[in-house]
Image 1 (cartoon, one colour):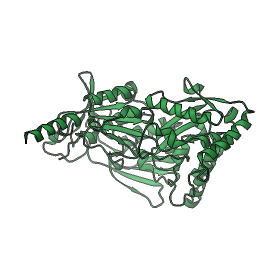
Image 2: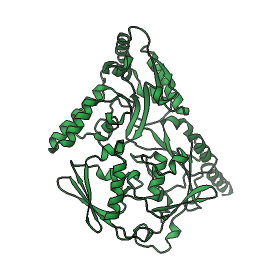
Image 3: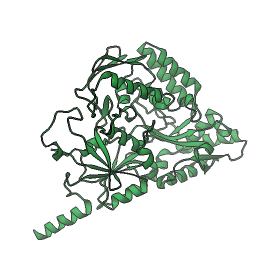
Length: 485
């Protein structure tokens, strides 16, 4: 019995599995820029999104599973034509005692919508024609076309509403011992029924925003319980052994992961030679150096199957081996460059895994006569790394990321024209046909070289509750602060 007890103690020390869920505060590190995370920006990076969602609340929010849940609105209806969403606000007031009214919410939402114009999120929200109050606690969104993904967009932290006083909700952000701490507000302040001794079932979240290397070191040293915000370029830092206290958790994320052609010059001037680069890339080998199990490569910008059962698309070039694809690519590159080996500069983050990806990409493109160099910054690059999580599960989000109005790189005016036609068309069947045509148009231009689904990872200690992998790689801090009963 003594030997078995000693082994149990040693196991707990090695893997941290015997820590009680309510044993003190939960120490969380989010990979990112600390200054950006705690400022009131417009378009937020993942760290800032987590902070905003913890200290502000929208009409709806995302829960631990990534599903839409009530926020300021506790119920809503959608009209049969899909062009009107009506929200009923919850009972209660703002934290400072002011009445929570539809008009007070409408004003802030309209201000946010106006500020987001000219951004990718603004394009996503553009079908909103009007936000109006219908009664003291009833607010309506009128749309130019149906938006089945409106709830997902309204749950974005950028559309969360910030109280005007210092009493933020659902969590209060305070600085203690030079660290940011988040305390869950009372159920009454969050618009929930009061629960006796509710403080016994919550814990403080001690939050740090750190570079990837520092966040992983803090985890390995036992200083944090949870690391959020990992991506492909820093995945190799998350290596763990069988007896480590760490567990790597991967999100089944959807979004963009690949290279955006910044300038259509030289060998990048024609769609056929841009396609040649995509043809030459062995995507599984590209990410294989990171040793990520279960990751599936794709050469489609919009994931196959995302457009429903009527989506006729499949992965491209399935009847060609990688050797045959590279032979075709070599011929096109040689013809476009007059036989001289072209040089292309690519920008991607120079984190540990980013270097591995660059070196493998460089090796592969050398086989078709292309020399790849590392650009000093985005402005000097021919190809730019794009790694972004989708805001909703729809083809329109993917096309909006490359709209010509954004001025972010090579784009397709023909695709933009189709999308304008989509927004002006009332018939549902016609809209679906236009959207499918827009996707085909954009993918044929090859202005983006996709690799597959984005890679998002977290380090999660065994005592952490309230963490659930999801498609949006978003893990709300209020849920992590709750202790299961």
